[in-house]
Amino acid sequence: MNSPRHLHIFKNAPWLFVPSFIFLSVFVLWPTLVVLVESIDQSSLTHVLSNSQLRQMLWFTTWQAFISTIATLAIGIPAALVLSRYSFRARQIIRALTFVPFVLPTVVVGIAFSSLSPASYQSGPTPLILAHIYLNIAVVVRVVGSRWEKLPTAFNDNAALLGATPFTNFRTITFPLLRSSIIGAGSIVFIFCFSTYGAARVLAGPRFPTIETEIYRYAFFLGNMPQASALVVWQLFVILLVLALTHRQKSISLAQRNLMPLSSERKTKRVYFSVAATLVAVGTLLPIAILFTDSLRSSQGFTFSYWATSDMWTSFLTSLGIALFAAMMALLFGTGSALAIAYSTRTRFHVFVQALTSLPIVISAVALGLGYLLAFRSDPVNWRGSLWLIAVAHCAVALPFVMRIITPAAREIQPELRENALLLGASPWEAWKSIDLRFLLRPLAIAASFAFTISLGEFGASSLLTRHGHETLAMRIGQLLSRPGEQLQKQAIASACLLAFSCIAIALIVEYAVQFNRKKRTQ
Image (cartoon, one colour):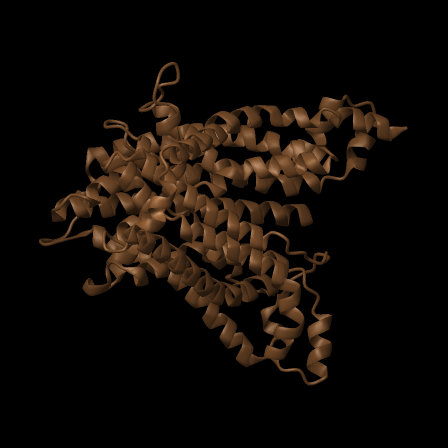
C-alpha cells in the first residue's frame, strides 16, 4: 500500500533532467556538432596525418599521456594503500592535501614546476610529465583508495599464514579485486593528461606542442578554424577509443569496513608508511611553497610589491563572480541530473543521462571554447565576447563532476524513510525535504565547492572566450607569462599563488567539514 504512493512521488523523475538536457544540448552537444561539421566540410582530417609536424605532435601528446598515466599509477597506488587502509593522526590532513593538486589550475602547476626545474629542464617532456603526476595523484588515491577501503583483510591474512610474500599477496589477491578501479583511474588520468592545456602551454613550449596547444594556436593565432576542428576530432577519437577499451571492467561488490590502526603493524611497516605519508605531504606543498617564495623575491631583495597590483585583485574579483555564477548553474543542472538517475528505475534512461553528461569530460575545455566560437558567431546567437558565456563554459566543465558527487549519495537514501514519513501524514514535498534534502546537504556542499574551484582555475575555454577588460585571474596569469620582463613574470607568479591559496583553502575547508559531519553522525 505504501509502494504506490512512494512511486507516485518519483514517477516523473526523468523530467528533472529536462533543464540539464536543454543546457547540454545548446552549450555542449550543438557546439561539438558544429566543430565536427566544420572539420568534415573542409576535409582537414586527413591533413593531420599527412603533415609530419602534426603527426609528431599527435604522437608526442599520446606517449607523454601514457607515461604520465603509468607513473601516476605507480606513485598513487602506494599512496592509496597508506591512506585507505590505515588510520593515523595526520591521515585527515594528508588526505586533504592529496586533493589540492587536482583542484589547482593547471597553469599554476605549470609555473610551479617551471620554477622547480633547472634552467635546462624548464620546458619539455620531463617537467610536463612530472606536473601531470602531481595534478592527477588525487584521482588514483580517491578512485583506487575508495575501493581499497572495502577489501577484507581475511584473504591476505590467510595467504600470509600459508607463506605468501607481500608481493604474492598483492599480485594474486589484492590486484584482481582492485583491477577495475585501477583501470578506471588510469583511463581518467590518461584523458586528463592527453587533453591538458595550462600545464602544457607553460611547460611543453613551442618545441613540444600538444594537441590542446595546437588547437588554440590554429584557432586563435592562425584563424584556421577547419584545421583546429580537425584536431578536435582526432582528440575525440583517441579519448573515445580509450573509454571503449576500459569501460567494460566489472567489479565485485564489497561491504564497507573500518580502517586499521597503523600502530597495529610491525615497526618496519610503520616506518615505511610514515615516510610515504610524509613524502606525499611534502611533495604536495613544496611546489606551492617555492612558488610563494619566488613571488616575494626581486633583484633588490624580498618585497610584497608584486602582490599590490590592482589588476590582479580586479581579475580575482572577476574570477570570483564568474565562479559563483558557474557553481550555482552547475549545482542546479547537476543536481537535477543526479536525482533523475537516482529516482528512476529505467536502465536505458540512466545510460542516456550518463552518456550526455559525460560529454564535457570527453570534450576538452579548449575544444569546447572552439565550439562556442564557431556555434555562436552570428546573429541571433552572436554571444562571443559575452562575460556570461565564460560562466556557461565553466558550468559545462564542472557539471559532470557535480552530478557524480551527488548521484551516489541520492542512491543510498533508503525509500523506507520516505514511506514512513508519508505514513505519518507528511506531504510528498515535506517527505523529500525532511529526508532526502537532509542527506544531500553534505554532498551538495562538496559539489558546489568543487564546481566553484574548477571555475576559479579554468584556463582552456577561457583562453578562447575572454575579451579585453574581462580577464579572469587564470587568464591574466597566461597573459603575463607571455610578456618579457622580470616584473611581469613576478606578477604572474604572485597571481598564481593567490589562485593556489584560494583553491587550497576551499579544499581544506570542505575536507574538514566532511570529516566533522561524519564524526557528528556517528556519535
